[in-house]
Image 1 (tube, rainbow, N blue to C red):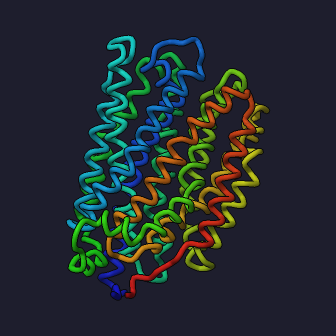
Image 2: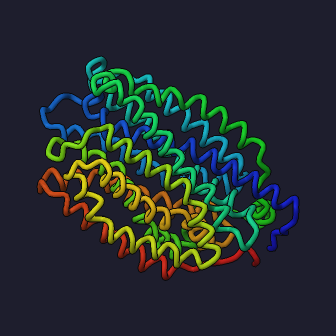
Length: 427
């Protein structure tokens, strides 16, 4: 099929790109406020006191991981909706689900009020968040990439990817402001404010998303669909799905190592960096990533998206040790510089990945296939990397195992992205 490039098509592409950016920004904001709260306060709010801070952090990260394990199921459920009913329908439902679950997390009483029901209800709501994100990413990417002109797919795919740093910027920026009130206020009440604020953002996102036209590639391919997309994906696309999972360790797992785990490690008494400094560094780094995301995507269209990703992966491997070792200096300028440098390298691995992954699959069952790759990688690498790194740090008293884990992820990602097939939408 050939998607025409004319004035109307470009207008649709821009509208789809904006909707992808706004929607994924809100989804990732909701996801990141949970991650930030898990790093800073959930261990004491929702779990019994143990006298060991790292045990509470590990328990909070375990609930955090639940969201990642729910994401493949969300990819299957909403992949089916997106491949059979339409990308737009799936995206409206996932955005609504995420907003409702996030607001309810802000309403939850803590362990001191309702005992074990507190972590149980937290896990249930985290599971709903995971289902929503599991269905969101693939649809947002495909809406942006499938509307895009053939020579600008990496650039338009970056609209969905830019939602990640934008959501992180909103989340860490708001927590950074709230931390001014002090740890006690943040722990008792302040942490709830970002969760309540999600309701306003969801309203804006739904207005934007409802105005977007359906993907032209879906409209042309819908007639070819028969049977369950998941069966077609598993039977026909299982090799590129497995390859896609192994393309993503750094883009989805390494990202949380240098943000979520880095926050918990830096604020541990053994390291002693202040919460406000780490949050400020993360906020500045997220802003830098947002600014350069489209530049990295443009370079992908200009010089090759695979080449840009490989360069980024090499950069992450080189910066892995400095990212963590600089924290012990407690020097604000060095810490911020290290976070920014790492985020620049991460941007090169993340911004072009939407186009790479979407073009690994033919249009039939593409939503399901891309969602399975991304969300299974998220469950394996994103969900477990902060938890595993925390346990390794607790067991060894050293951050070097986490550094080695990140470098190993880079090696695996480089090998697999070089082997990834790239199709076009002309079939």
